[in-house]
Length: 206
Image (cartoon, rainbow, N blue to C red; front, side, top):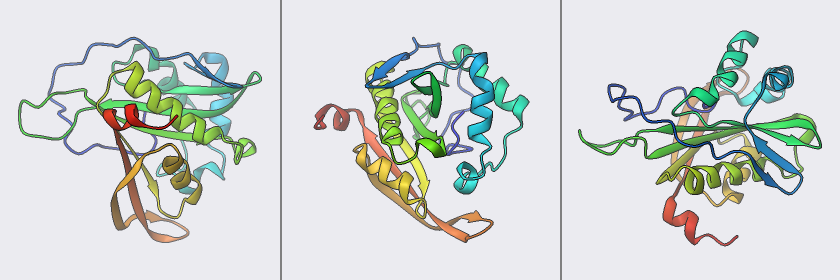
């Protein structure tokens, strides 16, 4: 359900369906609880996802409520989608996206080894460390929970807050695409991609 990338280069769409792995959720970090979504969360998720401030830098600027409900309630049955909601004091304040994908390579390369993460924070919770904590939780889930070897995340360069979150999470910038994404207000924007490898995660300073 990754909200940052619509398609992933190198994904082997003809491979056999992967086995469902154990969910890395729930996880608690301080006042934040990262868990799978339930039907009771859908209204709050719809409100956050289709907020005009949230959508300013999204590729999909609107998500049909029925599609959103179908996507979120389908996560527990997915072999590749390990997205979560972020709860604080009983309220949903963010959502995290974590998708398992295949790395690029010649035929016969290992499959289901990589992850793509993304996040959306409720505007009222912005600037409170929720985004940084969500990125950290997603990386922890990817490496410690799911055993992935590499995780990437993308952002518009003009989305300064999102870029800062990825850098504070310890990810390194490894791609800068010039004027790669169209923005209806700002025109063609640069896109950056960040990445982290499993051994980099293990060597990080907590």
